[in-house]
Length: 484
Image (cartoon, rainbow, N blue to C red; front, side, top):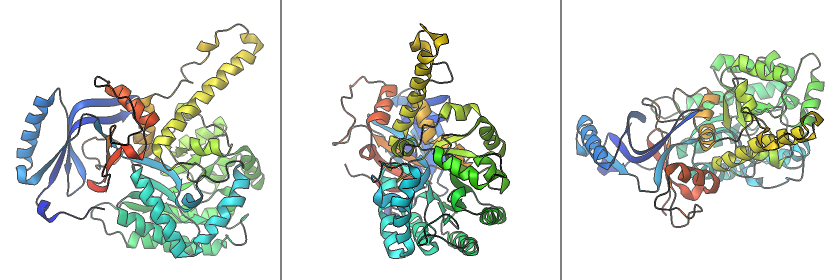
């Protein structure tokens, strides 16, 4: 995080002037070429957002806000360039920080084989806090560089290493939910806990996080209860974790219906329950501020159960493709009233970038269109039909606005934090990115002088990467800046 500049000690507000991209809702993306966002640097919250008609009006509004906030000595103005825009910070709703070191490995294996071959041996190494800290330093720095202002992290079962991750995230200034993983069954001998140990160490981790927050205002880091998945957690452990979530008023994260073999195996462990989802419900782990990653193969009854309990979904399309798990249908999740955000799911996913997650989400939606059209062709009753029109309104490509929504406000809604994060509504935290389409090494090419902002944003989504993230802010504080 940037150190305070003594010469700017009296500055109380910062104004950003230029193009502002604001996902007002899932169906409305506001792209304002001339706009101003004002930030109170003490609270880190947005105090004004003005949409303007031209540069002359912008200058007049800047002058008025400067007077309102105490004069030029107390106001810093950032003028965005012609190919720069302000975007809410990315929210990664599912990422395994401990898996960063072997990202890109083992993608010829399905989920359960991949876990036993790559994941569990690597995560067992995190019994060494020094080893863990080295991986976590690199991971958190990378996620921030790619524009992730809020992350929902899985760590490992090792409490001291989990605390090291918390310390690194806090020092870097990122907002995060951090979870100590729980595993007391069906796990390697070198990577497993007893039920009692798992509950005791989880509470020790929770107390560490809650007792060491040093940020004024609401904490940036929240401990999240983290049963790895049903297959690795006994019924007594799940019940105990639900009790800890109740006692400390904590969110919950886990995996659900990622892979068909996983679903079959999991449901065989609990014949007393109606479904994979019902297992979580039976043991008290479904509630508002619960996030379930994947949801690739759920029945409609399960989706209704998730919606009833207010559960959010982390859509992880890169991982679902990479581990041959299947393709989640975002529009189906939306039709059932579920809040959905994006997850990179490193290292199941092969990129730490939420921009990449947007691209894969676009592809995933198109897979469902292709599937529907193919089914129409294969159905004798549809012989001779126009397959170009076979896709109905429920199965259509995700728009650029919907992709940006998933990466920002959708993630905030899935976490139950939409009142605080996700766009530039007045009163929300200023978690934001200054994006630049034309740094010297930009992957976004062939921008024309008269290019519409809608086209520029599409190019950012489908061509952009960390080179296009110029600055990263969390709660009004700059936590990353790129020199180029």
